[in-house]
Image (cartoon, rainbow, N blue to C red; front, side, top):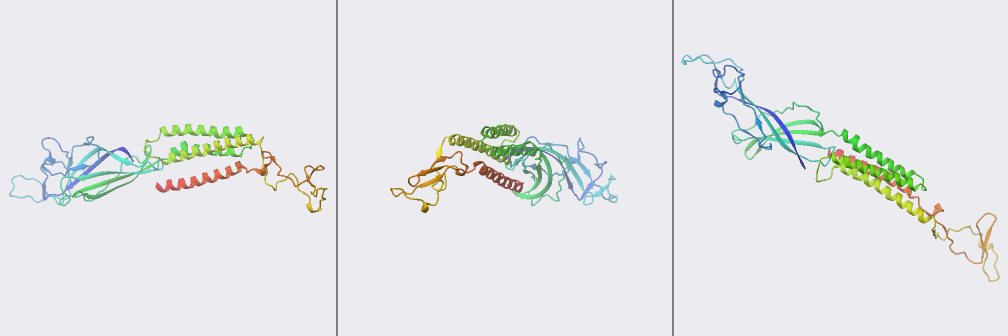
Length: 363
């Protein structure tokens, strides 16, 4: 998990109803609080607590008290000396408005980076009284800022209420979806191109050892430099992210091809002057029908093997195992490059299918 700071700007309005409220102290319904004649001093206001805010960096504005006049004043009372306009509180509620500016921390899970979706929560608790006496009513949360941010796109905004430690608490949830188009063009696409170039080295001729090794080695060095540049711009975490898994696979994919080309090169150099025994069925020539061959004075059959057209070799006894140059006869070896082409193609396709299924499902 990784903690990130988010600034929260909140405009909160409270609506109260009283049995009666006099309009004389508030000659202007839109009058703001403040001064010696502050109407908010005579009105009870709830106290709220931003639970996961970054204290003490919380700023609030002065409260503004308004009368929501929705009915006509009551009839005059002849017993009163002062002729004040009296309104019924149930029909003309009070609205107290106050703004809050508070940063709060959000625990982000970066394992799916850069295809991650983050959900941040702000907890607002009413600490004036317990839930038996005071609780949140109808809650509405609206986002008024920019939807498209530098790295994220603001998604769903939700609000709900719960009860915690006998107090009513409101939970504001904000969903952030990361904009990953930059990482697709700067990280994923270049690594795919480098892996394709390295894979193309398997189609070079077997005799072009230097060319095959240099192609794979150059792409490996370029990929490592690219990975170092990408890592400098990534968020620091103690665990492996999705983009780290992709880059590690690309490095391993090309590194094993470099080792493969070196091994093939060493095998070619050793096999050029090396002779290896073949199976008993591998003869230089094909024997004739032995039952039709004549016997010599010792009772042995004379067997002749055709080496070249027009020439023959006579042997007095059954031939021994005949050796031949293992490096020049293609029938005695398996084409390592052909096997490598099939293996790396299947490996790349399998990894891509599994990787993108896991990443998109986590998103």
